[in-house]
Image (cartoon, one colour):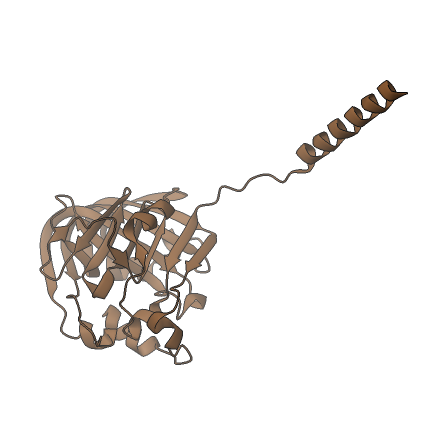
Amino acid sequence: MRLFMILLAFVFVFASCEEDVTEKPAEKSNPVLVQVSVIDALLQGFYDGFLPLGELKTYGGYGIGTFHALDGEMVVYNDTVFQVKADGKVYLPNDTETTPFAAVAPLLVDTAFSMQEITYSTLKDDFSTFFPTPNIFYLVKIKGEFSYMHTRSVPAQVKPYRPLVDVTATQPEFEYENIGGDIIGFYCPDYAKGVNVTGLHLHFLDESRQKGGHIIDFTLKSGTMELGYLLDYRLILPEGGDFYGGDFSIDRTDELEDVEG
């Protein structure tokens, strides 16, 4: 009888384990867009960084953003964070430095296009030619030769911080001709208003990794655009600070349009 009970218990445990295995749902592998804070916080002048760059890189190898105290434009390319400061030069910040606003994702290419003689305006106007729907997020990567590139970068701020629209009104701008490099950025749908920059938001890094910035305009002579469709989204918010006292009831669309310029 004792032996029978032991065998019965063994069969019960084995059957339970087998049931767990067969009913376990399949693992998903969709790339995740991870965002630090929201654009309406940046517009209000909340520039204190809170997420270390070393941690940011663990969430994705490509992306854009800014740095503590708004010290320049961020380009994350192939797991490396580049900092384009207000002098237009590119620096490599330490992993311990922080960001108040950024977005990163792994690059899993869903579609790619060879492109020639494409301007920033043309890319926006012919959106449906390249993007299957305006209602999801995309990681955008463009590599090529540019006959014209117009960028800007913001200088570091000191407290009390000014609103972003006031800072960018006097931002340094840079124009380049016949320059090779990479564009990294995102497309965000209209329903992301207040959370991120809707539409295309792109940053540039030249092939020598010495010039770059937030893109105002460009003309692509020839190159390739790769798109990654982003269907999963994670938002990381600051714990306390200015963010907790912010006013997010105001529609800041006009401010953002002035900032994006």
